[in-house]
Length: 200
Image (cartoon, rainbow, N blue to C red):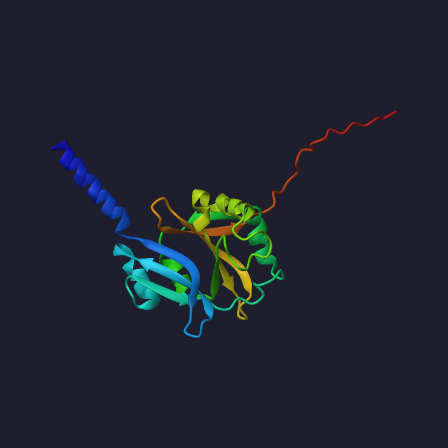
């Protein structure tokens, strides 16, 4: 009897963990003319269907074309330089979004691009290399390979702000984190080398 109750409990637990699957991915789609365009793909299931419905009137999945990112291809963006080389030095996690609604609203209404570890906009470190992966690991831990950086674009489609870091949790769903710039520490710091004064 105990074994049956235990099996039912784990079955309910397993079902509840995956009943509300919500996954955000970024990749490329091939158009009819052979060109590739960058797109965000969102997959919803169970209790998260309302998010896909809000994004594209489809309860299970949707794809949204990301706009052309001006000055992303090259080394002219100081923001992208920070993100690809020293993101953990310039930004920190502020908090996990308790609700997915703000992220869905962002994906539905803002102009943005999603950057991942293999981003074609990474002109600063080897694509898929250990250095950028280590930087993402400071934000997303072991799930760094699936991390996405949501970067907002201005009116002329230039990158202006890191809005969210999207990480996968331990069951593979997307979790969104708000970020904030790191502030330099203020105040006097003790000298690492002692000073000696000779008054003779």
